[in-house]
Amino acid sequence: MLSTNLEAIWDEYCCRLLGFIRGRVADESDAEDLLQEVFLRVHNHLCCLPPPEKMDGWIFQIARNLIIDHYRKSRNLVDLPPDIVLEEEPPESEAETELAGSLKEMIAELPELYREALTLTEYEGISQVELARHLSISLPTAKSRVQRAREKLRDMFLACCHFEFDRRGRILDYYEHCSCCNRNC
Image (cartoon, rainbow, N blue to C red):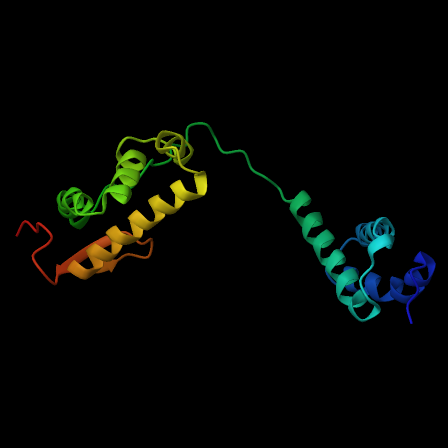
């Protein structure tokens, strides 16, 4: 039975933990530093140790997290030259341009509370926090309305058309199931 005494925990886990850490960290002094850090964290949580049957998992998870942190700190970050220009947004595909005309018509078909939430956030650019204030509703309610409006709009499009997407989720092409969309053929 494992005691809550730090010395007993050290005796029980020191060798196994050091072997575990050495298998993942090449530098010997870094491995020993990480071992010390594991036991420092154990010491800081002596008041709330897990039950003995969960102690292995708990201590080794602390070690895993410290190893991850160790590698995050040691990553070499490279400064990008200032003359690199990132493309803001990829240009719209032809299919997206064609569907844009149908978008406003479908938004107009949404129930009033969803139409208003979507129009204010997507077209007028107000945040969901501002939407909540504007409509005198809670923030979760505002977020829910915007999300439900998007879902209803998506469902309307999916009922109307079959879409083909690229690997980034952009519309490559679509085929109408009905005459809802204004396809310019």
